[in-house]
Length: 304
Image (cartoon, rainbow, N blue to C red; front, side, top):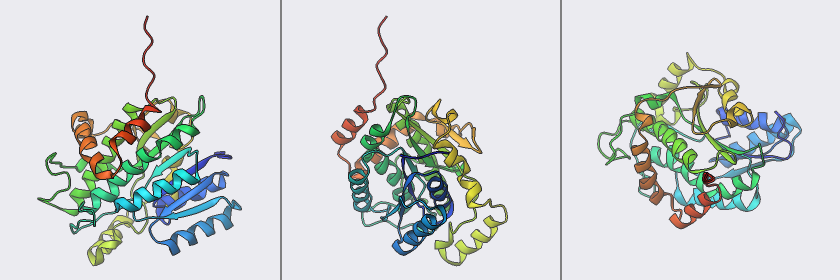
C-alpha cells in the first residue's frame, strides 16, 4: 500500500483490528485519524503507532459513538479538519448482553453498531466526494460479520423493545450494516465512492468483555478459534486500496473474496424501510442528507 497524501478515518481504533489497520495505514504513509471512546487508551495507541512507523501524521479523536450528539460533533470536527477523506472505516462496535437505552432513548447496540455508521458516513459524504479522483474513488468500508446470517428482525421493532437478547441484537446490527452498505452504494456514483462491507473473522480482542463474568467467559471460548488483529484487518485494508474492490460497490467480503449474503440481507424493501426509520434518529437534516447525496449521485444515462 502507498497512502501518501491520503487521509483515513477509522473508528474503534484503540484496540483490535481498528488499531492493527491504523498501524498499517500509518506505515503506508497515510494521515490517519484514530477514533476511540477512551482518550488515554486511544492517545497511547496513536503515540505507539507514530513511534513504530515514524509517521507523525497520526491523530486521535474521542467520541462515544452510541450518543447522537457526540457522533454529530465528531463528524463536524472531522469535516472541518480534513477537507478530503479518502477512506472511512466504520469499525467501532460492541455486544451488550443486557438491554439498555442511551440518553437519546435508543437501544445501545442499534445506536453504536448501526446509527453511528450511518451518521458518520452521511455527514462526511462531501469530504469523501472531495477526495475522489478519476479512477480512484473514495471508499467506505463497514465492518459487518457473518453473524448477520443469524439475524431475526421485526420491522416494527428494530430496537428489540420486545424479545431482546444480546446476541440477537448484535446479529441484527450486522445485518443492518449490510443493508446500509447496499442502500448507500445504490445512491452514489461508484466511480467516485465505493461502499463495501466485510467480515473480519473472530478476532482476538477485548470484544464482549464489557459484559462481566459472562462476557469474559464467552471471550475465552471465542479465543479458541480467533485470528490475530492483523489477520482480521487484512480484508479491511485490502478493500481500502485494491483495484478489484473499486470495480464494484455494495458487496460483502470475507478474506478478500466477494461472498453471497443471506436471503434476508437481500431484502432491499426492508433495507429501504430501515434507512427511512434510521435517518430520523441520526440527527441529520433530511435536506442536508439529500444535498450530500446529490454531490455523489450516479450520472443519468445518456439518451440515444
